[in-house]
Length: 161
Length: 192
Image (cartoon, rainbow over all chains, first blue to last red; front, side):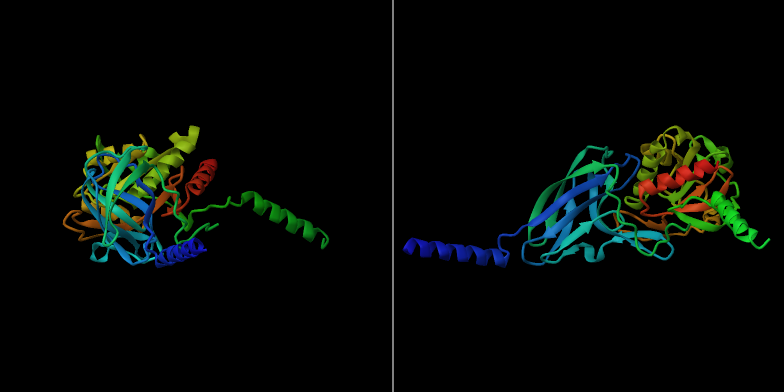
């Protein structure tokens, strides 16, 4: 009888801890980069980051041996499908708890500046991600020739016929 | 005579149906027009749009420093051209740099051939490029980047389709699906 009570207690504690989010993780999936010639000075990496840690966090920076410098950048659209790129405000990507942030074509990306090598399809590029609270994480970006294409961007004309 | 009217109307409709364009996924330009020739610089010297007369030309304005939108678009065009099979040599992709200060013809050639061996990159003087961009309504503007990137260039991210008659009436917006571009190009090629 006593043992059973103890088990209940342990179980309740576990549930409580899980609810706190203490056992959750920062999850990074689908890390990839686009094939790019040696003549291209820069490249981009994309990934999906889900913050299950139970607390707000930030992706502060990233590094890779394949890149002289790595910065976090975002694309923006101006009037009339003019696209531009800039470093994200304050240099970091906010990762609110419980949310998934997608780094994708036409949006946020990890920018590989002064690429040290050609990126060929099938190559795997190791990246180190630095989170403010979750610490560092090693991920591997697979080089592909395409994203799953992004959904057509809003506000654009289509099918003029 | 009155009884013949419905028949007449029906025949007119039929005729209209024969002549109607297939559906295009890209953006149709309301006033199809013959485009002006231009001459820029490739690795082997001057390259003119008229060098590709009789081909469908896919004209893009970009730069090799661009890590996201340009390689994305060019990779898509490479895929589409390969998918055209026997018709691939009826299509020519040209990228005009919006960054002639950093993009040399040699660098452009190496960059473009990565996406498809037939792709051509063109450079020129600021004035030459600005004049061509204006004709297509292409906007580009430099702005400061970071210490590592140097300046960056905002630019129109659209692919202009010039048909085999040298007319422009269709363009592909950024983010258009590969299969849609392929279908549109097949329809353009069918027109001749």
